Image (cartoon, rainbow, N blue to C red; front, side, top):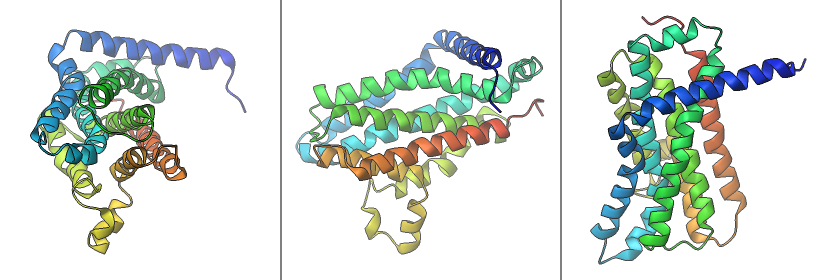
Length: 254
C-alpha cells in the first residue's frame, strides 16, 4: 500500500526542517565547521610534504586517505553533536512532537551530508588539482567515494551516539569503531597478505571497500565492475547503519 502524497510531503517537510535547524546550530560553531571542512585538507597537505622526496608514496596512499579522513571527522563530529542534543533534552522535546524517528534521523543525515559534500569536494580538489595526486581514472569517482565514506561516518556517528552517556564516551567509541577498520582496510598492507582471520574480518568492514574503490580509480582509466560493487557496499552499509540508528533512537533521555 503506497503512502499518500500529503503524508510524503509532510515527511519531507519535517526532514528538511530538522536539517535546517541543525545547520543553523552548526553555523554558530566555527570550531566544528573547521574540524569538518579544513582538518582533512590540512592532513592531506601535511602528508604530501611529508613524502615530498617520494611523491609516488603519496600517490599510493593519498587516494585512500581521501576516504579515510572524511569518515573519521564526520564520525567524531556527528556522534558528539547528536549526543549534545540528547543530553540537552533537545531530542526528547523534538520526539514529543509529531516527528517520526525516521524523519529525525533523515534530517540529521541530510544536514551532515550537506557538509560532507563540501568537505569531500574540498579535499578531493586539493589533492588532485593542487597537491598533484596522480589519478588514472576520473577525479569525480574519487569524489563519489569520499562522499560515500563521509556519509558512512555520519551514519556511524548517529548510531553510536545512542550508546554514549557523555561526549567523552562518544569519543571512546572511536578506538572501537574506527581504529580496527583503519588498521585492516588495506592502507598499511595489502589485505590478502594479512593473517587469514584478519583478512576475513577486513572483508566485513566497510572502510576496506572504500579503500579498494579508491585504488580502482587510481589504477584504471574507466569505471570497473569492482569499483561499482565496492561503492555499492559502502553506500549499503551507510543506509543500514542509518536504519539501525533510527531503530535505536530513544524517545526519552535516560
